Image (cartoon, rainbow, N blue to C red; front, side):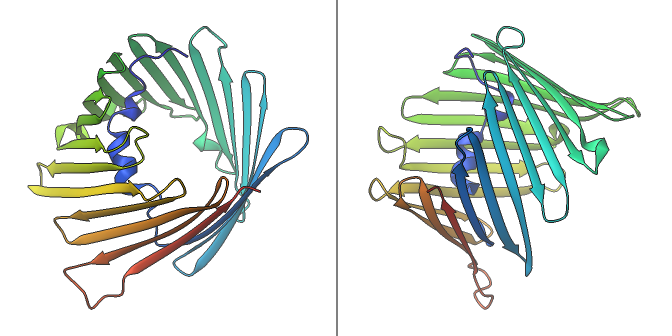
Amino acid sequence: MSKGPGLFSDIGKKAKDLLTKDYSSDQKFTISTSTGAGVALTSTALTKGGLSTGDVAALYKYKNTVFDIKVDTDSNILATLTFSEILPSTKTIASFKVPDYNSGKLEVQYFHDHATFTTAIGLNQTPGVDVTATIGTPAIAFGAEAGYDTTSGNFTKYTGGISVTKPDSYASIILGDKGDSIKASYVHYLDQLKKSAAVGEISRKFSTNENTFTVGGAYAIDNYTLVKAKLNNHGRLGALLQHEIIPKSLLTISGELDTKALEKSPRVGLALALKP
């Protein structure tokens, strides 16, 4: 694929990952392995709200095709097939879920040095259509997204965004919710490997006049240990410690505290991901 402006979903993703990725109040255990035939197997057990669930996933790559199948404890089967370069500079993704046959979706992504386009169509009797377009370069990108309901003939969403990427910083602005909200974020990297960073994000919802301001960051103590923290103007404080106990195996401990209601117990999450 070309090194163009990236997908529309990439706009704002760096700040979002710093503020949300790996934060959890659940208990999660994951183990991954691979077979001699090249099939990657992943088993996950999750405890959330007192309920336990689990799933098993298998991923197989053959030339330009990736097969990904997941089966969970509720007997749901999610299958995703990804085809690269069926046509030059394209990626095609087909997914469906059993027994929810109306969840099927077909997406086509096109990559160019100065633009990317995606089209996703629901595979059901009343399909919805989502379209995104991004133009620019790896340094600056402008993008838009629209969703259309073929049954009602109405737009379900339209969003616009811009991002600016520099060697040591990243900034983005997204106008979403059909123009009812705006979100601006800025990330500044503190090292060349971009493991340590500071982030700020401000969002406003015009219909409710609600503003949310969040600051956070990540700091790499060494090559194996990472700490993260975040705090918003509503008093929500989050912290995270992630340690690579053996190569590619991570232990993550995270927590969240409401500083405006200290009588409430903090929420604590634990995740262990093993890749023997």
